[in-house]
Length: 171
Image 1: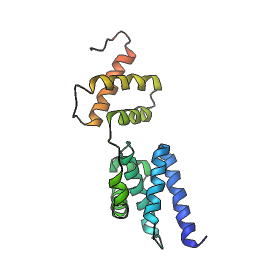
Image 2: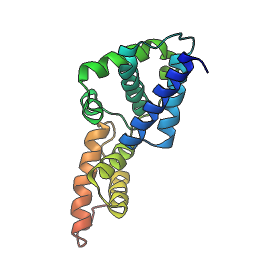
Image 3: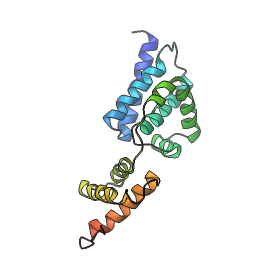
């Protein structure tokens, strides 16, 4: 194994460690691997100054394309970097991995965000399932609204329903 391959393997391991630290799904981790392989295809040397930015760009697009998007601000906070570094990584990765970025991508739904928010808030599974029930009921009435707004409303209504069992959800 040459020096370039060894360095690429180290960066790949660093990427997987960051995925684990962020609690990303197995599907998202696999997407990160694919994107990293595409990025490093035909690369002779990875510039030391761009390694962290590349990792951030890969994480941003992997989360976005697998239904768990992060804003630039959220990603910078989770990875203890700057928003400028995230933007730089997005630019680097979008140029080299455009085919993978544009060919995939699940739609971000309120259910995806709801599960992510409940996990981040440390809410138990039984609450999350109630919130998903609320989402299924009200989604048809608020079609076209932003997914993050709907997910937040689902959680608020589920709190009322979950913690006041006598509350009857209107049908």
